[in-house]
Amino acid sequence: MKARFRDSMTWLHTWTGLVVGWVLFAVFLTGTLAYFQHEITQWMMPEVEVVAPPEQAIEQVQTFLSAKAMASPRWSITLPSERERVSTLYWRDKNAGGRGFVKAVLDGQGKEITLRDTRGGNFLYRFHFDLHYVSVFWARWFVGICSMFMLVAIITGIIIHKKIFKDFFTLQLFKGPRSWLDAHTLTSVLALPFHLMITYTGLVTLMLMYLVSAINLSFSDRNAYFNAITPQGIQIKAVGEAANMLPFSDIYLTAQKALNGVPVAYIEVLNPGDKNAIIKFYEAPTEHLLSDYRTLTYSAVTGELLENTALTNSAEQTRKTMINLHAGRFADTGLRWMYFLSGVMGTLMVATGLILWFEKRQKKLKQQNKMPFGHKLVSGLNAGFILGLPAAVAVYLLSNRLLPVDFTDRAQMEIHCFFATWFVFLLYPILRGASKTWRDGALINAVLFFSIPFVSVIMIERHLFSYQYPRDWTLFIIDLLTIFSGLTMFVLFNYLKQRQQQVNQIKV
Image 1 (cartoon, helix red, strand yellow):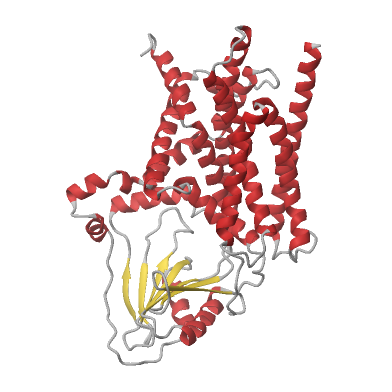
Image 2 (spheres, helix red, strand yellow):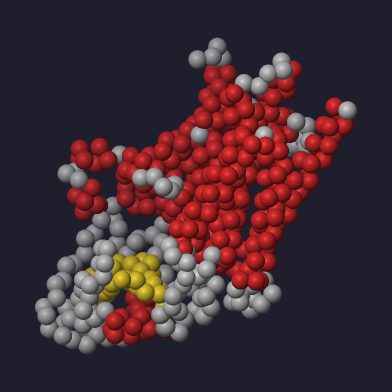
């Protein structure tokens, strides 16, 4: 403990930020991109063109499943929406391998289509808390510990910056460590409420895993806990008597009226083709921050409403609301962009904090004509992570276009390309040094991001020069963002090149 409280907070802020800063940078960057995970998935599945309205799509689904899966005891259905453009179906089949599930994807005309195998934006979403190549259990514990460090760093940062709002208006560019401090302050203050919210709610999303001992102490296991706090719904078994089901579209329209137009997250059909067939509609928490999470259960034969349940446990309602707040599921397009920009600020806050740690010590170390291994390691990791991860995202998108559509295990190969690129950037400082990694990495990033939309022109039919509007606005905006990212990286490269030339002139 330091002599002064503020000095202690400074020490705590510095080391909690540095020790896990590189992981937090990866979590913030991929989590920020995940706010548009469905749009990224659309871009990575260019085969999907026509989108059917939900009431038409559910008719197509019923026709398809009645022909393909009438013997299955359960159907699970996700309908297309503004952000998800296909109908996704799952059903059980005893002849299927693995866990016995069969999946089908229908386009806007109700035809089964084979999409290019890709994890799309979902990979980025899952990576920001599940990581990859490691056990999900340990990954979530690790990310949770890092998030706790992040929360401590934010709170101590507020404490030690007594003039945080005054310094916000004194940004100085190209002034060495002072500029990095100003940039760190600027990106911190601009979205400070968001940083606090996103870090705390991120911990809440995984609280049931972290508090498993408390749950087991009060309940026999997690199932008993969930049975106690969530409505279970009626259980109806098949009687073995065949019956014709009503058109699902009619029941869907009835459910929509009961839900006051709130979208349906997914649909479940139990005992299809049986006299006791039922259809369940689960409310999606995408319209409002506070949701009742209602489930409407109808007889699929008579259309009668059998049950209308909602989440009534206030503690679970609070937990789900915080998850909704963290994920931004309730946000419209404008608010989602605010989430995205705030996430960019958080990513830059972490990056500038890591750079600031090294820059503040570099001048003193140069005067002493020494560079300890720890400082070299921080310098190399800064360059490898801060430039390597964006490059990995760019290669992930490029691999989606360049890999053959029928490539075996294609989705996993895209992910392998992502990590291989990141790994190369982590090794690059060893071969070229940190300063050259910054310059070379910025140029490589610029080339990668600039090439994305133009590779699409060569590899697929829907591209920057053939888009149809308004259908393809989402794909067009993603292409523009890749070009903007490339331009930003090129500006960074040009600045680093000029600064190196000035250093060389001074030495001469």
